[in-house]
Every structure is written in C-alpha cells, then in structure tokens.
Length: 560
Image (cartoon, rainbow, N blue to C red):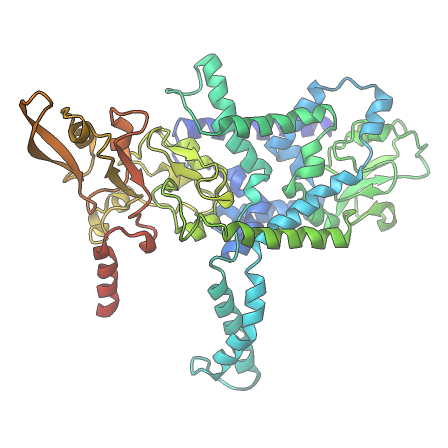
C-alpha cells in the first residue's frame, strides 16, 4: 500500500505542476487549471460563510469531505501538493536514527494550534451572524405582518421565519465578514509561492520557465515563508501539516466520522513503538489512534514487525481518540480573537472611505467588500496575466488585502483583448467576462467598456508641460478608439526666447479605461508623468469620477 500511496503522490504532484505550467503558458483550452484550488474544502466552507453561496466548481470540496468521512485524512498525504512537498523535504533532511525518529514523531500539544487558527479564520468569515441574529426577530415580525406572506397558521409562521432570516442575513452580509483562509490554505499558499517567488527564481537560473522574465513585489517575503515551512521539516517532520494547516484541521474534524482507520491488535502488539518511526501525522498508532491527526500514510503497518496493525472498516471505538485534543476555552478565545480582529482591521480604513488609489483591481472584479469576501489570495490571476501588470498587494488594500491582486502599471498594462484572469479565478472574486463585455461591444455597447480606473497627469513631470520637450508617447500607445488621450497644440517661448509649438496631452475621463499602458510606456520612468488610480472604476459607483455615470443610473431607475 505504501508503494501505491507514493504512486498517487507522484501523480497528484505532477498534475499540480502540469496545471501550473499550462497556466503560465496561457494554454487553458478548457483545462481545469484551478482544480486543486476548487477542490479545497476549506475554500468551499469559508466562501459559503462569507457569500452564502458555493461558487461553481467548489462543490469538489464536498467530494473531498465525503472521502475524508469514509477513509480519513487521505488528502493530506495522498493528494495535497504542499503535503507531498513536506514529505519529500522531510525525507531529504532526515539524519535521525530509529530512536530519535520515534521520539520526534510522538504527538505534541502544539499540534492543536491549527484548530485555533481555523477557529479564528472561520470567525472572521462569520461575523455577520451576530447582527443577523439580533435583527432576525424584528424581520420575522415584519415579514409576518406584511402582505407578501400568504396563507395562515403554521405555514405562515414558517414562511415568515425563513423570510426574516434571509432578509436579515442579506442586510448584514456587507461589511461584516472577510475571507482570510487563503493566507494559510496549503493550495493557495503553494500556488502563490510558486507564482510570485519560486518559479521566477528558477527562471533566473535556467531561463527556461517564461518567455519573458517576471517580477513581483514582495516576492521575497512570500518565498521566505514558503521555504521556511519546508525547511521546518528538518526539525519537526510535517510541521506545517501537523501544527499550522487550517485545511488539515478542518479535515481532522470531519475524519472523526471516517469508517476506515488504522486499528491495533493489543494481543499481537509488543509495545516496541516501531510503528511511530515513520508516522507522518504523529497520530500515536502505538496506543489509541488519534483519528483527527492520522494522514493514512500506512507507514505504521509496514513498520510493525508483528502485524499488529491493519487498516480496517469500523474498528472498535474504544481503541481511538475520536475528537481533536483541544481546549474549549482556547477554541472560544481563538474564535473571539477572529471576531475582534476583523472589525479592528476593517475600521482602520482602506476599503471604503479611505481607499488607496493604488488598489486597482483586475477587470471583472466585484465591488471591494464583496471582493474581500471571495478572494483567497491564490494569485492564480497574477500567474496567468500575460503582461505582468497584476501584482500581489502588500498593505495597499489594508491588512485584509494582503497578497490580493492589484494592477501596478509600472510593471505592465492590462491587455485590451485579454480576459484570462477572469477565467481562472476559483471563487468569483473576478467574475468571468467576455472580450465583448470588457470592451463594451455588441450587446454591452449601452453599458460601455469595463473601467479599472482613470489616468491623470502630473504636469510638473510631463515633458511637454514642464520641460518644453516634445513627447506624444502616451497618446500613441492609448489603445481605445477614439483615444482617451488627446493633445492640444500650444505655442510657448523657451528660455532663449525662441517660439516652440508643442502638443500637450490631456485625458478624456469618459474614454479612459484605466488600462495603464500610458503609465507603463511613459519615458519618465521613476515616477511617471501619467499615472492611473482606482477612481472611476466601473465596479463601484461610489468611486465614480463623472457625475454622468451616476445620473445615467438614476435615469434608468426612474424609467423603470
């Protein structure tokens, strides 16, 4: 069985790397390149809490949960790419003898930390439940008294209860939750690390990964975290999986229901403890098995010299520790920490009133609050972007927005005929759009193109404005038609008294879509004379630059 498991490890790691490769090459062609991200149960559970929906292919997460409830945490050791990497690094750095291996693989109390991390993250995704519970009785009474609810008796009561809960939840969902599981979800962490740090580093050495070199802001931070978790295996085997991984914690909770598990025959067992020597999960197979910690690696069965261990269907309950070894008070404190931390972070600004002008989201992104309730920081959109304009944010979007995608036009620009980022987003933070919708063509002509921001000029740095030097680069590269950048001829007198005719550029905010190519191509490279900000973006009418957009919406409402 161990050889079969290793074959599965090679298969799933190879499949994961294959999807990374074709995403890099933008050879999507219907390949499920986000399959591993969509199959993560933690993503399905957390996004269901924040958005009240299960988005698209996240139903695969339910399949993994079902498998866990039958066989235990097979995901962690058979299918998880990050877990397989930990296994490999642990094997490389192992210099311990048998006695040392037995001691290092015994269960430790620190392995309960992952459950507290899970509790804090799910609490941040669930804060909306508190105001919903407070407001629900009033909504139920209001629904019961309204004429919308038909019927009488218990039927009317039940209908009112359902309507009241739904109304209250929908009213309090905005601004009351945030999705932060992507910080430590193993698949999101691995894709993010590969995208922004590992593969660009490999390309520097081999020049064989990309057609053009990639650069990402803050890549060294992401890379050090990734490498740090891998190297930690040399001190504590599978440290991330055992102590940190919130997905492992979630699967550990569901594995309590598993029908198959490792079972020990106390008659044959001689208490030699050799079964612990290669135990990946520190699940104590030599005693009462900790079901929530067992990775189903099956190493213990191979290592037992007396055939005292087997993988059995419905073994005795008396020979297992069914629940995770966590304290109730500690779990409550972890949840309370999440509930308190999120409002403190949100109210520090960065999302609504005091939004950062540099937080320019990819085209197709939903409104910022909804975006933060959907984005898992996997950076899959950054990976597929052909021009390198998408970058992982640091703190431009506040602490909540760490490693979410933003457009930095000095690095690239948004290609006019590209919607790849919307095709690979696993959670709908960037909704899937067509080229026609992006450009405002065909059936979308009345709505106009999708705008990610608006360009402005710093006239003190612009060559024609400040230095009496001819330059029309920004106008030439502007891709929209008619161009959003136009020039006006002016006559100026230079310092020597000669008369010069210059073309000074201006922005038409109605035509500008915020693609950023003008900023990228501006010859003033250190701090471009033309720059793009998030104002005027289509996804938020609160950030409209032109009153005409708001007036058009008002007229539509009046006509309806």
